[in-house]
Image (cartoon, rainbow, N blue to C red; front, side):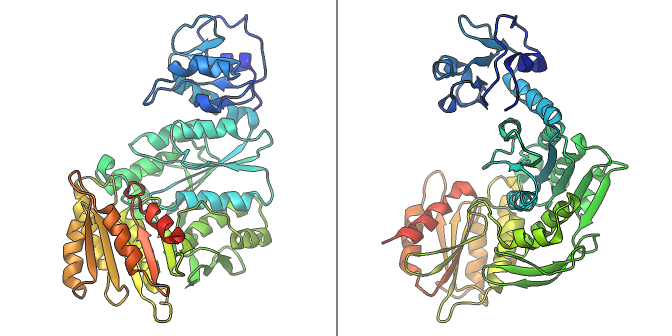
Length: 456
């Protein structure tokens, strides 16, 4: 970090007299007292616990100064009205000070994968940093900015939203030079109510963007009314300015062409939606001066965040298609389509495990039931459904599939059949089978993947 104590005090408008504090260089900022090291700045945020309760511990561990929303005694501190606002203000200032180019990514599905792809492509040529883990909110994004290495030239930021206005705030902090919205789906319908409101929230990505900065968006009419007049826009997908052709899906890879590069692209991940994500990344890389040769090579050797459409091996040799980090109806339909198109292993079957998709609001049961259109006895041999809102899908699938091939396991306040689900799958899965697992992270399907991988 390239900031000093007095510089920070000035930027955040510290309300106390800081003249007696030495103008020390700050090592890094932390809001978790357990991570504090000598020379750090501690930011006590309010969550399940009030970070102010850990100020003394942070100082003991070596913090040279702390922010605080109240006066302190015998502790070097900077007094502010709101520690979170101060963190965000400091991050926005740091963008200006460093001159780093910000590339922002959001979307109902694919934003983490697209962020990783953009990072891998830009890192072929520039010192590049990206959002780590799920640090894509009002705390994680400014923390990412302030944590980037000093030599960073390109910063790839993932932006998430739970409520209308979330993306606007993140965009105004980071002020992207380039940005992309991967997809307008049904994620977080519980908070937004309609897909149109989700589109409105995602399009608030433009709030911090200059009109001459580039925004990539799906060729989806639902976003049209939210495009600011004069905004530089490229649309992708069918009928858009950027599109892909000659898509070939294989078990562990995709091959395709895009209309702005001369050669075929290949990526080591399945799911045709990932071809669209790669197209977005490739176009951004091209805009940033990355050569076609480097784009092709980097896409062929991607290093993606785990648990996003990842093939694994069960201990008995069966193939596991793990997509268990999160789920919404669009993503579930797409992965079911991908799994259906993959050829079966010789003498093997296809098993599908689906769990509840969270935060879908009043339409949750209907959206779960709509998955029946993506489930066919011609494609899948056994179906395992787990949760509460997914019960209606079980009733529809049981009427569509042969008797005994569709199974339901309850999860509600009174009953949780998770252990029975695990035991049933372990007993059923044969060495030549392929199994897909998809559900929201809170449904804990990752544990089933772990059991299948490590069962002795």
